[in-house]
Amino acid sequence: MDTKTRTTDTSQLRVNGERLWQSLMELAEIGGTAKGGVCRLALTDLDKQGRDLVTRWAREAGMTVTVDKIGNAFMRRAGRNNSLPPIMTGSHIDTQPTGGKFDGNYGVLAGIEVVRTLNDHGIETEAPIEVAFWTNEEGSRFVPVMMGSGVFAKAFSLEHAYAAKDSDGKSVKDELERIGYIGPEEPGDHPIGAYFETHIEQGPVLEDHHKTIGVVTGVLGIRWYDCTVTGMEAHAGPTPMALRKDALQVAARVMQEVVACAHRHPPHGRGTVGMVQIHPNSRNVIPGEVKFSIDLRNASDADCESMDKDIRAVAARISEETGLPIRIEMVSNYPAQPFNAGCIDAVRRGAETLGYSHMDVVSGAGHDAVYMAQLAPAGMIFIPCKDGISHNEIEDAQPDDVTAGCNVLLHAMLERAG
Ligand SMILES: [Zn+2]
View 1 (tube, rainbow, N blue to C red):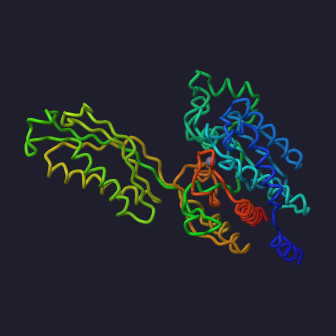
View 2 (cartoon, rainbow, N blue to C red; view 1 turned 135 degrees about the vertical axis):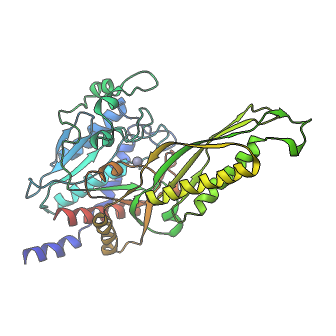
């Protein structure tokens, strides 16, 4: 009977969108740029100010704060049964040099707003609720990206992360120490019951489809290749067309096939050539060698593998037709990360209960949730951002969408936390 009453009550629960928006704007003032964006690079004084503000808000909301050795912060609201692993949400508060107000910050402050809303209504959850911010997600000042969550998930070691240096030669460890964010907890030594991350889409799909909520089913796998086409340099004048070994003309055919390959693997196939080096790169010399990058992405490892076979087969055919050697070498392979079916359903149900238009989407960008998905059931909630633009000072989102995403987060977390 009690349970039933409570369920009815929480289905009516809504976050305070105005308060969430205010907090977003206040945090954006730290490192705010003239063009309306934010520059708050990881482990700078400004990052410290941002961290201090967010953890102060958490304490004011009655949460306890623990920090681990890589500077990840966990802000905890106790539950009725504190031996249960917490239902966690979070993201990052560092930004790109020309970053916006929403990327990452939204996911963290949406978590704080969930807690504030539960406090307003005196709602206790069975499992504790935690809000995390992960160190150096952006990877702009220090490589690798998603550093805090990566160390937490043991994708690489704490020592490896500590040793990373910025362009001035300052290390992660020294900078963490300097801003006072090396905590006592061992990274990863922290149970998670389920993880949700709310984020702006950083792409144009939701806006294009006029949907409020993106139910994220997973993150695309990425394969990076270096491709080399070898021809023969020769004078552009005396060498007739039939007797040339023009590496660029052959490379151009392969490049078009990279895009065609993505089209052959709908709906999530992506193919990009972003970097080209032509040798000797001279106006009147037939190019003797062309090196270029290939970036292939898709939603499952099977699809990534199929794209790999496809582009290699096409390159082999072009090589045979032209007589020029084409070498394709894989340099990185990030597996696709599907999210947990139960978490995906919780997000979809949240959107449906609340009456928001929604669609299933995949994330083409990496997020801390990718690492969390290796440790616990995880899911993500996307909201549209204006023109799909992010990593740019003009990054923008509608207050109504910001509120909607947070409401979905609230309901998904409540479903999981009991
Ligand atoms: Zn982000």
